[in-house]
Image (cartoon, rainbow, N blue to C red; front, side, top):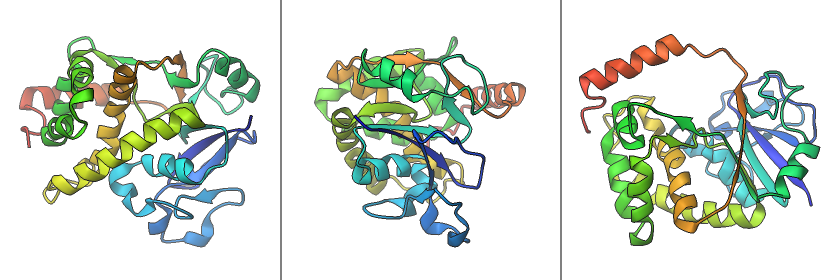
Amino acid sequence: MTAKIYVASHKIYPMPKDPLYQPIWVGHAGSKNPLDMPAGWIGDDTGDNISDKNSSFNELTALYWAWKNSDADVIGLVHYRRYFSMNHKKGLTNILTQAQLDTLLKQDQIILPKQRHYYIETNYSHYIHAHHAQPIDLVRTLIGKDFQASYDKIMQRRSQHLFNMMIMSRQELNEYAGWLFPILFQLEKEIDRSDYDAYEKRVFGFVGERLLDIFLDAKGKSFTEIPFVFEEKQNWIKKGGLFLARKVTGGRNGK
């Protein structure tokens, strides 16, 4: 059984040497220097791809590429600044190994990062205090009745799996991606983003993060959670200040 974990990056950055990991340049269709991609990297603009949507889909363009083009039996997605790490230590020598992955796959065919917990907000209120409300409201209709009970349940929870990080068997990924992307493509057609700033235009990546737990709950999927690390220092004071400011001002004013 072959496994490949794709490392999404939009710039040249140190990458793992372990062959388990494959760097993928996201948004490569819009790169100003398409020939500058390092040896061993791949672009998300080959084969069946949505590379030109990267500014609004974020790292999900890498997930789409892997779903459509990878021949691996197990497919994962991480980020150049975020990796799974069983010992919860930073550094590329501490990230998930093939041997560790093999052991985990004996338990479950879906591996996710540990959930992020919110203590004063629900998942829904956290989203609308950070982003425009319309997309997350509209997606409830687009997912269909079979998923709406799970939507309501997950939105009222105070924890969720974020960052579009995951490892799945081919069968599980086919089911998830085959459900996820048609919903996001339809959402793309139905919302007006003309007044969104560059950050908010990443809306389909943000919504996609929230759809994962809805899918897992509605389908009754079993999964294993493992630690992950941020390779770069996080400015939690700045993040906390921005969060409080959005909460006081009402976030994106429901637009």
